Image 1 (tube, rainbow, N blue to C red):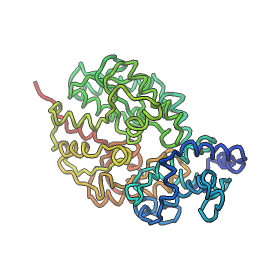
Image 2: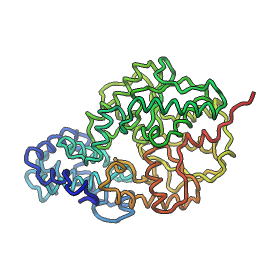
Image 3: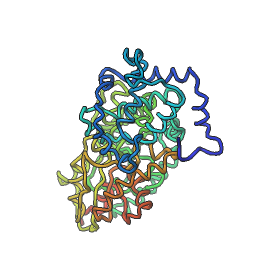
Image 4: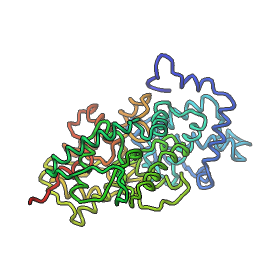
Length: 448
């Protein structure tokens, strides 16, 4: 089932081998709770036309039946039919209904966790308009109810729930990093009064980031602070709740997802900020902009925007000045699935790059029809499927190579991580950068 075990004894696989009726019933019950009337209408909607296959980067890279979105969808529907439809109970063989047993649970994990990033490209090519990622997430959530999320992915969620961020960064380390970045900011801007505010109340925006930035890419924090300084923005970080990521989106566990996103709401309330600004993270945007109000069952009393939208506004209103010649290398853009196809932020990053780089070239296809990089859906966290992830990423690598670009920009740190691995694997010879980093490089500060 997997490409890499957790060690000499894979306790996760042992747990699956020893599944009892109690766990099976838990999965069935949870699946029913996650599939409402709109989703149930998909039961007889798939016409098996096969168009979804060519839309999937997994199938494009490896044309196996298990990699087709229709196969993944029908793995879920076969169980729903068997237990919750009259015909599935009366004539299971005729309807394609199947029993949920250990073998099916193994296949669910291998296919629904190991062969899907939830990118949504299959849905826009589906002749019946079936929301395939939603059905796969429902099944993942059912597995989560029985404690069957791959442990590497589940550990990331639990780390965020228990420590406040998915990297487990202590508050002291976070503050120390910001103090160091503040010193760098003053040197970059030649302004001894430049600051990185923390826990300042009544600011216009609360800015959130992927914890991988303070842990591994602190210069990304510097780039954002530099842009905010140039725009004379009223902003702050929270010392406790600054994590834009939410891997509960990937496990399908709404209770954990609600806890994680709820902390950003709490930070907004405590600090009295006006707008929640989400750093460059595709699934973080999708989670906190679109899904979180449903998870928390409340309407947010404040706007939620991507930093990409904010920076585009800075440029269009003249709050910052850019010199594209400061970024002379040819640049291409990767569209993160959760930000673009599933999130709706499509043109702002293009507007920004056209204003901040000298040579911008699009990938083909792009925008809503872009190919997933392969790092979404929790794939970067699941080491047991790592080889498959890299092989599926070949489609994105080929796209990048065809552009001839030397820099590939992605407004998402998960994508940056995957693109960095693809760069090494496929010898692309490119640099991976965020949008805000390109803007920071092109900033022109007024001289006295």
